[in-house]
Length: 184
Image (cartoon, rainbow, N blue to C red; front, side, top):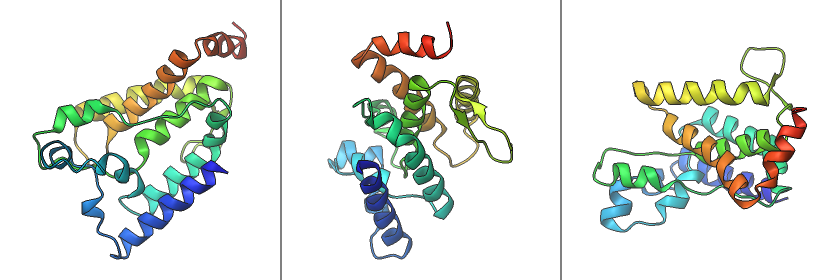
């Protein structure tokens, strides 16, 4: 039920921003505004605003399918302060979307169920989570280093890392469960 509520709120806010009813620029993450203007609300509200219908759809679809797995464990992802500190003096850096948090949820799900199948665009068969995870991390790391598009690859990368590390800190026994799921 919590997952559905989060999806509904995120869709509502994003749609209101798409239609111009809400000003998404005042909700998006801008490290400079958070740090220097003390607009702390942006740390939370940026996850409710998306860059377009596709961005919203894929984030909410991922949240829907993998959120339930994570909620069963009681472990919840949160914002990575690294981005705030890195870009606190760059007034041009902006971010929207729940991609970092959704990556955390996806990777926590992989930690809990490493053999679950994950469908990737245009690949008609599911890829096991334990294979998908390192490939996704390498791709995000590489694309973040290239910095050639307007996608928050570092948010995806660090969200995924958080989705693995935070549950393990909270419940170290999860690692044994992970290995057992893999038959190790």
